[in-house]
Image: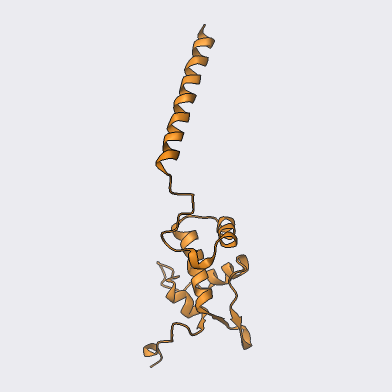
Length: 135
């Protein structure tokens, strides 16, 4: 009967429910990775679950959104924990989504051209140095 019950989206969720909702599940064993959320809690001050009697954690929809953002940046974008900390300190959490340009992975055509020009200049310098060396 408990499996058929669905909580309101704005209701507080346990750590297990949060991990399931965010698909934090070990692919090999199928176990829910609640330890990941507990670790992230220690690393990111933005995660503030309500801790009730017996030490049970309950996560608000805002907490879940933050955890989902952290998961996205770490697992999908490949950021380090320190990189994610810097982003969370600079950005409003509501502005972060899958399409955000964090200035790390996307390069404009101008920056690509600049890199190509610099490489050409470096190649010219190397050729000139070889000429001088070989006399």
